[in-house]
Amino acid sequence: MIALIAILTPILVALLATAYGSPYAVRFATNMLMWIALVQSLNTITGYVGRIHFGHVMFFGLGAFATVILYERGVSWPLTLLLSPVIVAIFALAIGYVTLRLHGAYFAIATWAFAEMLKQIALNVEWLGKGYGIPLKSPLGSHHILYLMALVAALAILVNVAVERSRLGRAFTAIRDNEVVASVYGIDVVSYRVLAYILSSIPASIAGGLYVYWISYAYAGDLFSGLKTDTMFIALLLGGMGNYLGPLIGSLIFISTYEILWAYIGEQLYLVLLGLTIVALVLFMPYGISGFLGLTRPLIRHLALSLTPKEFIERLALIRRGV
Image (cartoon, rainbow, N blue to C red; front, side):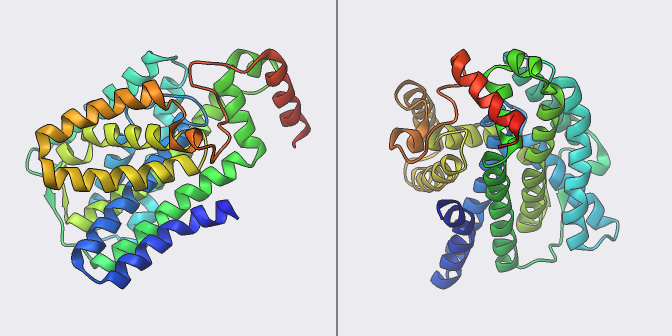
């Protein structure tokens, strides 16, 4: 029942915004739903598999540019939203196969570097808008985008619910907790990580495509912005990673707070508070709100810790039996 409520929450947000009726409510809800999709998709690779993915924004940006380029070449808008995640998934497969063999900070730095590289390429290539961006005449109205973004957010939550309740999810968390023992028990560590990487790329890329239809403009400085990755991580840490409720809670609370603070205290003070929030979360709520309130049973104690050998063997025994 809790999982069903979580999956339906994005639809409820869209309905409430429509009922309220104001353009601001629609804009705010669309933005909220976009971040729910992005944070849930980050949770797939970071929360369940344990890879700190500082380059996650590249899936968002690639999906946006793939959508714009396809649409400009005469592809219908529904088909652009179906093809762009396929293109990004192929990219994720290629990049993931190389980078997911790295460990700790090396993976985080490598993926951050890839995202920055893509941003610089787009900022210097003429047909990608160079430093000016690509204007776009959107075929979709604001309410269409609102409900499509709600469906993407619901899809991202559904993916994590399915992962968490499946043998695949248990394999993911076994790799995250102790990849050496997991490989000894026959789990192909790199292949499972790449699969999680591809799954995480799909909602993010569709959200990117909807975003450029929403704002009618594709600019690399915005689409590959490091601030977007920072926002994803803060919302994920706030809500709690490694479960599907944490990213939902974190996104709802943080984006609402973000909107209020940005409007009333200004950009500079907001960034100071952002930094203080990160420090407070790491020190006092390492499992996020969902773990702190006991709303979920964290699948890990912390990314830096492993299960005891007995607990780990029991988990692997469940995986091998297909439970």
